[in-house]
Image (cartoon, rainbow, N blue to C red; front, side, top):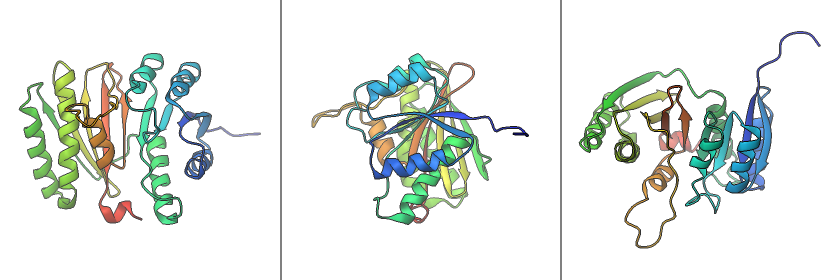
Length: 247
């Protein structure tokens, strides 16, 4: 065989072995630059496989029953700090072919191209003071109005509040709020210098805290954490207009 070969990215899939999982697995396997190095169904197996294989990207369904309360993201970062994490909730029924295909295409796009050229972008540096949360919300509302994306303001404000509040609450020093809009998808991201990782918490009927990432999961089409070269992290969430998400 002659010619150069594409560099491959090792993918660790964490999902239930069902029809949804098979479609996602096939879509990822069809890309020559991706190599599915393992597929597991529990967070314990995910951490062990991450330790053993050190994948480029971990793709996990946060609807798995053992995700919340097990510190899986922190455990993954502890054993392989440079692994990218892409999280998702299955947004379409398996018999909704157009919706399912769009959901899978978006995930594959996230895995392959984490730094996509944005048609619109903005960045705001924030202090570690609690006043940063309302400042960030105001910035996002005004910016999306300017970008004629008013239909995304409500979910974006919820995501912004949770991501900025998490950085302010848990990390010493400033953080940066970044917004990009690319092919009908808005990405809201917060970069900070903290080495820790966010994790879903188990919620009870009287829980007064720990709801932040559950809100992020509910109002985004996908979210995740990227390792930054300086030791910090970038926590991001994506949201699309309803008519786009339903395609």
